[in-house]
Length: 485
Image (cartoon, rainbow, N blue to C red; front, side):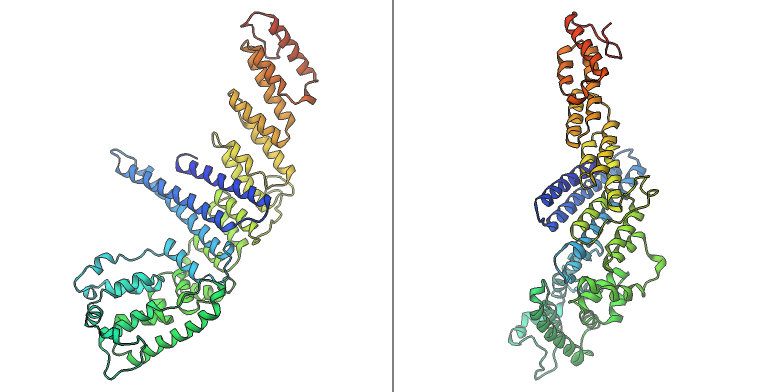
């Protein structure tokens, strides 16, 4: 791990430690920590993207390096997407996921069409991109942008300039004359503006009443003026009314279709009720086009967190994403640990899939220079015996290269109760100081040896060598066994 990925590891670790501490003290707000995880990932994505741009723009830069960075950007964007969808379905305390799901789609799946140039045209509806752009905005729930683009239509602008709209109620109640195209576009605009939104369960009864009235207005507009509406406006109205053929024609994949069906047709779906909609959408798109990420998203939308974690592990391995997501979903009460065969857990009896996710991530961090302390913290949620064994392995793998490193390792041994490892580290430092002719420093390190282990013959030999070293001139060292020459 290096660069942005190393910084991501340290930031995720800091959030994980705070979450672990907060959970130990009582109930914890998981949404706040989930969003913090995603903010860390977004920062990493931005840094990786900047590195990619620099690699492509550098004179004599390596195209291979830029391509590798681009692949890392895509991988982390998918990680952000998966984390966010799990947050919507499994972490957020909202049974009705329609609105959060629309925000997820807008952030991760569907790029918004560029409407700035269209809005600036003198007659924007004459552009071949005008109506398709409006339809995509409506399909993806971007109602504010859709109204902005619809408002640029010259006939709607002319109608507004004449002032006739102010004299009308906005309902399609029938007037003395047939409405103009501008008036019909005004009615469509009013439908988009007044579409009800369900933000919480407390608003459900009010929403259902408003939704029924709104649907009746939309149906009446189509029934009375289907032939008079501009074709592009009629398609927009059919999207709002969740006409399945229109939605299917406008969607390029199963995810878009699921969101369009739920947002426009069944906005009161609970997170546990998406299975029929997902299966219906999947049936319209061939399976050979699905990627590993598609299967992860499917299992989440089908309310199957265990399968989602299995699919995630198969696609991305047991890395930081699986580790943190497993922890979040377990704390949210969505998944429980499952025992693993010892062969799958490197011979570790009694290991669970959750423990293995933490262990693998800890191994990755321990193998990265300078991150072994972070690795130890990811052992904290494990059973004490298993965690202690792996903590000892991580500590023994570290080289005692300096006084500061030795002090850190001894502090870790104290936390984990690893007296033998602490004695080994302190002994190395005592011998090193004696060789360097620094008996006072050697004595201080000897004092840090766990007391029950100081009475062994090895330490008696070291103490005798230390006494002799104190009696000899400075600069006289000891041999490998701690004996003064």
